[in-house]
Picture 1 (spheres, rainbow, N blue to C red):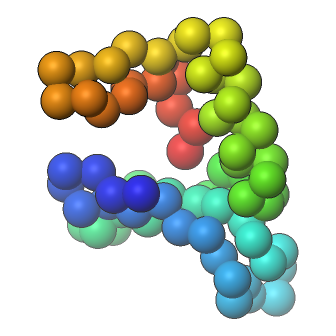
Picture 2 (picture 1 turned 90 degrees about the vertical axis):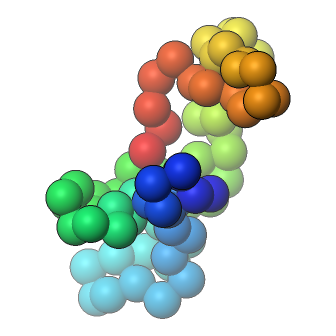
Length: 73
């Protein structure tokens, strides 16, 4: 996923020695945000996303973008 500012959500398939394959973390293109793992795996991230959607903790905007009420990343 990419924000309008060019920030990314990263699925790490080649982690460092302290990481785990499949972990999720945000990457800020200007280096302003520290990269920290926000989900231990892609399935864990999808579960968290599904939880937000099932409980309708989001709002769609006029362009069709789904904005979660809390950040998963």
